[in-house]
Amino acid sequence: MGYVGLPLARLFSTKYPTIGFDLNQQRIDRLMAGFDETKEVDDKLLREAIQQNGFRCTSSIGDIRDCNFYVVAVPTPVDDNNRPDLRPLQGASDTVGKVISKGDIVVYESTVYPGVTEEECIPVVERVSGLKYNTDFYAGYSPERINPGDKLHTVEKIRKVTSGSTPEIADIVDKVYNSVLVNGTHKAPSIKVAEASKIIENSQRDVNIAFMNELAKIFNAMGIDTHDVIEAASSKWNFIKLSPGLVGGHCISVDPYYLIQKAQVYGVLPRVMYNARRLNDGMGDYVANQVIKLMNKQGVLVKDSNILILGVTFKENCPDIRNTKVIDIYNTLSEYTHNITVLDPWANPIAVEREYGVHIYQSLKDIQQKRYDAIILAVAHSDFLTLQVRDLLTENGVVYDVKGVLNREYVDGRL
Image (cartoon, rainbow, N blue to C red):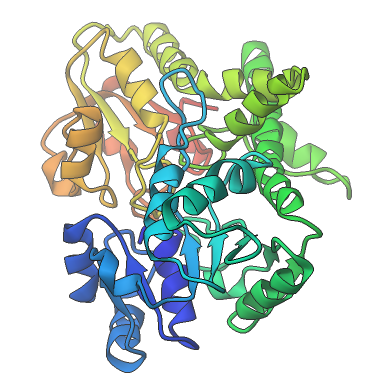
């Protein structure tokens, strides 16, 4: 019942009796109280689903035994060496295997490389259940397209790719999703095609942003403003307008590693994807060093300086801190000073402390009593866009705008 599972379950509950399952009892308790801390489902909508549609969440496996359409939406992370970690998927498949019955369908939504559903997940369901795939139970794959924090492309408006383990099951899966989606579906010819379509969505974006980040490095070295260059180039009708930036989160910065690893099994070295990942993963350190360079030019002593970082989540107006690259900025600067203040009104301070060991503030009042030698706008939360950043600076302090959203008059450098 996370960023993907909860919005989808709430949507299904408008048409079908729906149960949300999660191992985290604290999460279940909060949801049943009508509160979603991810902010993906409006609390009013959640309460309506519970009170009017009978939607409920549980951590008890017995409560889902009578279901006949199971949707798996668990994380697909990588390990410390950027190798796919399929344990959450295998665990979820084990859970499904304990409750699935003859004639039931299990649909996977987690982002994976082609083949994971049928080669890694289904064998677990078969082993645990004792049932035979495509004889006793069936499968589908419909890749998630949730964009955390996006209130325009909400789950019911997303066009979904669907697929099934037989032509008949593909039709059933397609009809179930179509029944709750405004913009319909695209039925892929196979589960592997559907899996591949999802992995390249994020890989393509990763490569495109890496190109913009590389351009930013080139133009910064030349003393040319990258955003001015992009504005000029985008006057051509077929130019794809993207901006440089930090690539974090649980999708774009993780998913390409799944395809990179699988490609190598087939003897293909995906150099473009691999180099894009390396470049994007290094942008936090690059930003920190650009700030240090600016401070030196202004005659500001970096050692023991006071630095303010605005934002810690991986994207604007969203509480998601998974794989945020702002931490790389923090870690690089912490080699020079421990006087680093982080402000983020969207992030959960307890979660940030637990995940990264960094204390953050949520209110502007908490940070206004100090003056800072450098301020870094790392995340474009709407709360920051009207902030008078220069009022918080020391005499020679600098402002660095990672997102290119602040008034140019107030900025000394930007990506």
